[in-house]
Amino acid sequence: MKAGTIIPKQKGSLEIMDMDIPEISENEVLVKVKMLGLDGTDKELGNGLYGEAPKGQGFLIPGHESIGTVEKVGSAVNGISVGDTVVATVRRPDDCINCKSGESDMCIKGDYLERGIKGENGYMAEYYKEKQEYLVKIPESISEAAVMLEPLSIAEKAVKQVFEVQKRMVWQPKNAIVLGTGTVGLFAAMILRLNGIDVVSVDRTENNPIKDNIYSKMGITHINSMDTPIEELPAKLGKRIDIAVELTGSPKAVASALNLPSINGVLCLLSVTGESYSENIDIGEFNYNMVLGNKVVVGSVNSNISHFIKGVQDMASIESSNPGLLKSMITRRIRLEDFSYDMLSDREQIKNVIVMG
Ligand code: BGC
Ligand code: ZN
Image (cartoon, rainbow, N blue to C red):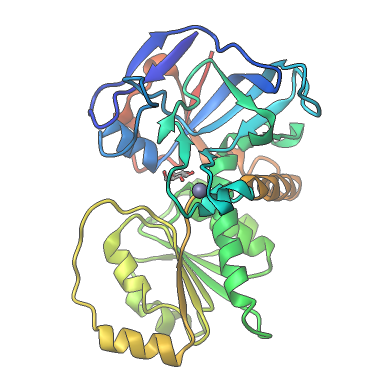
């Protein structure tokens, strides 16, 4: 089979290699990859900034967002059959208590692996094998959109964190601001809407027909931060900000976001910003506002299978009320032979997808 490979920490090392189709054992499933989604982490992998090859293997098969069809099942597998459409989760547990309880996204030890990212091959291949416990079955209605189930699961986990935090009080949050309208940003806004929250999405785009359509169908308000800087949002909106979610990838935006939440509000930080960046922040004022306002800043990374399962329900519900809306986020489809990591710098795209086979 054909597989894309990179040498982690080496920019420009992408190569298509020929290798054997994986052999499955009795509790494993062989999956034929249909599509592979790419994100900011892939861009970092391509730039040689991130990633780790599996032990004893000089290269890594990247790719952690996929959808595929079950080709073969081991004799001990039940509940998954040949022909089913499936998505695989990303993180594989170590032996810490959270990992052992199915919450490897909350690993406390750090020895977890991530398929396509850290120490385990991913899905940029014609086939991969996996244990049943890491596979989620996908209904027909979302069999294309679910190539984005992994990024959706990241947003599901983040929104869950926010609601868990707000269980502190009888009072319930009503208004949210989402900074950033990449795939995960759009999903975070949509999930908050499904939960009945008023959402304002903020980015630096003038108009984008696909995003504008999502805002109008989902009842999201869009604000361009070129017109209204983040600092001015609370005054401009003239209402409380109960929830802020930051996923612009810009540390400067993170600094501005720190002051967004109103009293009892929560800020969820969700973008992995590699670069070092300093800003003069009035820590006295920040602390004063945090303490007197019972505010919380929470970081969130990765997701576990429960977030994928919730994601399937939410995708199906968005699909049934707005057919085709999710799929419209897949703005570019390419073949493996034509893929290069440079493509991921095109800011016009929402989701880039490799069509396998
Ligand atoms: C992936 C996560 C992963 C994170 C850090 C993200 O792009 O979606 O699953 O935990 O990168 O490696
Ligand atoms: Zn762990």
